[in-house]
Image 1 (tube, one colour):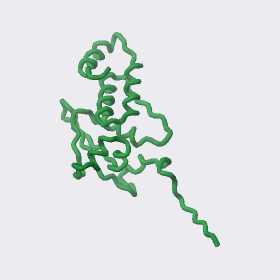
Image 2: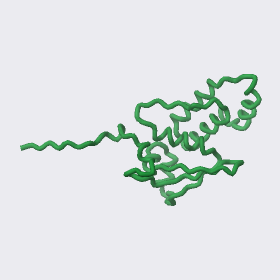
Image 3: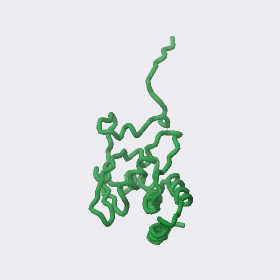
Image 4: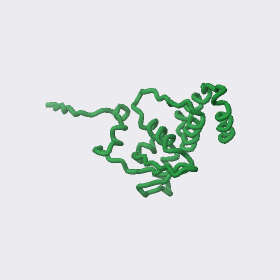
Length: 157
């Protein structure tokens, strides 16, 4: 006699992991990033799961599971903005098969997103950031700001 068991479950790839970043999650986050913005007093916190980030980024994989892994619950992040770091984490937590667009028309913010995605080797987000920069509409109103931003981020193409 065969028994069939019906279980409400789904494949890992179909899981909406972003739901587990909420405060009342059944699977609580295990790392807090305290982002301290450069040249500013502004700080912000981003909560996440080490295992999920490690699966998306070789830098996080080494940071959390390498031979010299970081074990503290709060990790300070510098040389970026809260917004750029949050965009990267949101990208990593995006729903499966859902396209991701960066809703920015500011060259500095785009460069910050590109910079942080390259720093953590989130290749797909780096590609999106580069594409957004290439399509950036340069006008007489934003030309000087764009040129100054390009000079500050001269390491990019």
